[in-house]
Image (cartoon, rainbow, N blue to C red):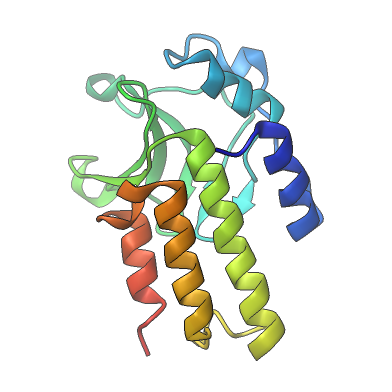
Length: 176
């Protein structure tokens, strides 16, 4: 699993921008392993990543009272809230169009999310080098890069490719 410092270094190398680190004050009251808090404080998350946006300046809060174990981290490109589930430390998004009734798995943990964002970003950069700036928009991604991404996601977080957000994104890469 990637370390917080390694993530921050690699993210800056890819995007020429530091990830945003969470303060202890923002994480106050969060009921997860200290490793998760340390990762968020030392490595952080990007304010913008492909498909996902994170907000690090607000205290992590529950989406709704009856969803108190789901702490808001940011939002998807569709406006669905991305949450850290305190129950097991997983990262999910909640469907805002259905009153948060449906959750979709993203990653098993914050470090796995960070590493997944890195490899997805690497795939984007490589596709753009080979096929131009619009390679992702036009789904003009070389098969070898799609295969590499799938294998990397399996290595990083096997459940992430068994359904949920990343499996759907992999399928979207094949759409014409």
